[in-house]
Image (tube, rainbow, N blue to C red; front, side, top):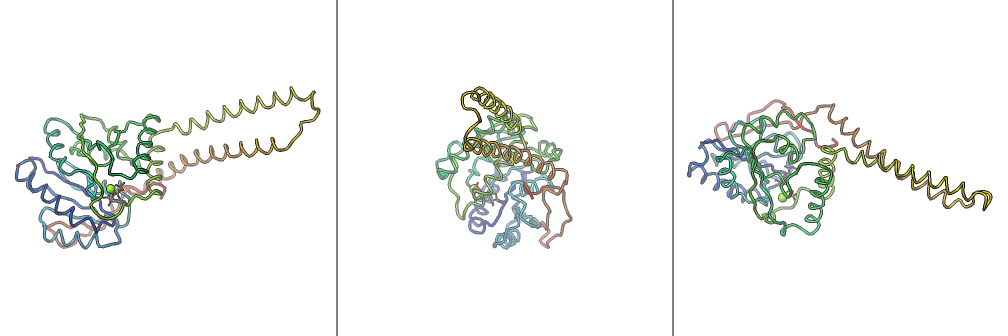
Length: 331
Ligand code: UDP
Ligand code: MG
């Protein structure tokens, strides 16, 4: 029987945690009783530098609930950092990552296990539909997935970070040294046999989203710029196009020269200068974004830093030393 580790990132989730703990414990308990998972299987809650009562709740849970462990990061590293912290330093045969708000259906985990038993190494949780999302979230998410496809990035449509991976896949994942690890695009790069399970995304059980518009846009841009150089190519293409346009203008001015004598009107000149300065600034900005990315990568800062880990067998908070890992994009 495989040892299952269910990694649950939590950032200021005091409102939803009690319900999540209850539901996930019941699920894991059932899987163990049905002999689908080893009795050593655990739920691992990763507190990503919460400032509310998340850690207090987790400490109490670990003391009372033998299936739960908790890890606290030294500060907020972001969703991806929290997931990596949970997977990289904790031994298991099969890893699952699922959000704390239970928007993704935990019941799918049994189905995922079945697919792994039939030879899959990665099982992606895919949202069948998004009617529970706000209109804006739905449209922006769809636009994001379409854009990623257009830019040539291999990403599973409507799959976020609800997935099951075998130990083998996690070991291979560790070989990807990039700081800005965008898991939903990196996992398909690891390869191996993969399957999907489909579910309906429900509204958050409680609490509010930890991904406001600003963070969502930063996350989307990080995904695009980490996996595609098409924006840079577009800059080059725009450069050629504008040069061609400029050449046409020059030709037109020469052709009109005899008719009007001197070139008249500053409005057109000012318009062109403003327009082209804008295009140049945008182009430099895009190139700058990629240089910033190189800057972040060469620093090789940790993905995450673990403060402490608590488990039922070792309730005394065990201090841990610095681990490898990840900075938030741009930090
Ligand atoms: N999360 C995290 N660190 C952060 C932001 C979010 O660990 O800096 C966790 C959060 O607690 C939740 C998951 O990531 O378990 C997804 O966040 P959320 O549900 O707020 O995002 P949404 O579903 O609204 O996109
Ligand atoms: Mg959510």
